[in-house]
Image (cartoon, rainbow, N blue to C red; front, side, top):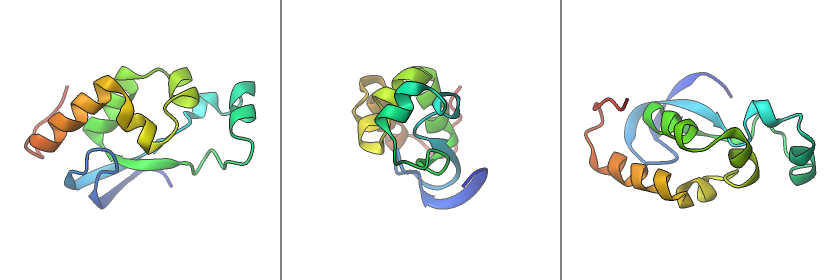
Amino acid sequence: MRGKKKKDKCDLCGRENTTQSFHHLIPKKMHKKHIVGELFPDVDLNSYGILVCSPCHKMIHKKINHFDLATQYYSLEKLKEHVELSKFITFQQKSHKNKRIK
């Protein structure tokens, strides 16, 4: 599942009626790394992901590097536990849906 899609709500912040994009929970740049193969031997890495709104997707990649995404924040629940990202999620839930995040 790739590209943008209209969905009821963002998997991360829960905002409704936003255009979603697919976020690979294990970044594609990490798929061929040995550690990823050891940690996720039975996972289809190309389809393992979530649909998130653009501001959440940008913030995930701004706050967490690829290695940490692959080894520590590889699930929706773990992403929500990231300190800085959880603050952003709270902000997103309270903000106007059309407000642009830089």
